[in-house]
Amino acid sequence: MDSGVIIEADTLEELATRPAYQPTSFIATVQRFNSFAAQVSTPTTTAARAPMTGTTAIPPTGQSELGEIRHAPFFAAKMVPGDLGTKGGIRTDVHGRALRDDGSIIEACTPQVMSAQP
Image (cartoon, rainbow, N blue to C red; front, side):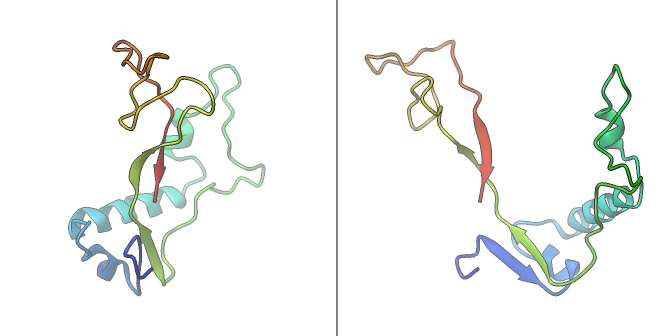
C-alpha cells in the first residue's frame, strides 16, 4: 500500500477525495451499485439472460449475486490496461501489434487478448 497502487480509507467520502476520483460521481456510482446489490435481478443479470433458457447466474438461493459496499475499511486499486501476451500464439511488440516472422507489423491484425492489471 505504500506504493499508492492500493489505497485505504475509513469512509467512502474520504476515498472519493483521492486524486484519481471525482467525489460526486464516485459516491453516485457506489450508491447505484448498492441499489443493484439490493435486487435479486439487476440490469446486468437481466441483460445476461441466456436467450434460449432465460436463466442467469443468480444462485438457487434467490439472493443477489452482489454485496453492498458499506463496511469500512474501504480499498481501491489503480487499474491500468495490460496485455497478457499471446500465450504462444501471434507474436506481438510492446504496443500489442501483431508481428510477422521477420518482425514487421501485420497492419490488418490486432490481437484482442487484453486484461486489466493493478
